Length: 77
Image 1 (cartoon, rainbow, N blue to C red):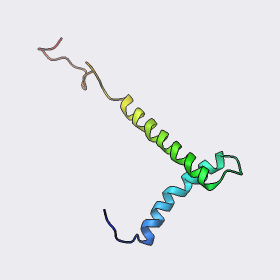
Image 2 (image 1 turned 120 degrees about the vertical axis):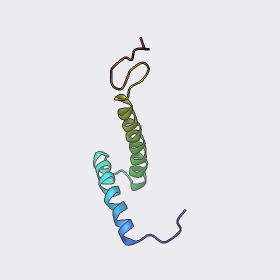
Image 3 (image 1 turned 60 degrees about the horizontal axis):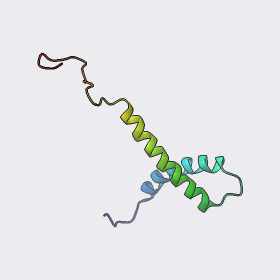
């Protein structure tokens, strides 16, 4: 693991990814929701989003007897 201190640019890049997600989730919660609770909800939502992404990626993939090009060779039924 790299133990060098983070640069301002690296932190800014991470913040540019993090804060839009945080603000979106915060906006969907009641106004009195704490930061800690918002982060817990965000973690669960992001876990679910990763799962949904993986499921979508698998939807279009062939399985079983499905062939990529759809043709059957002379030695296949």
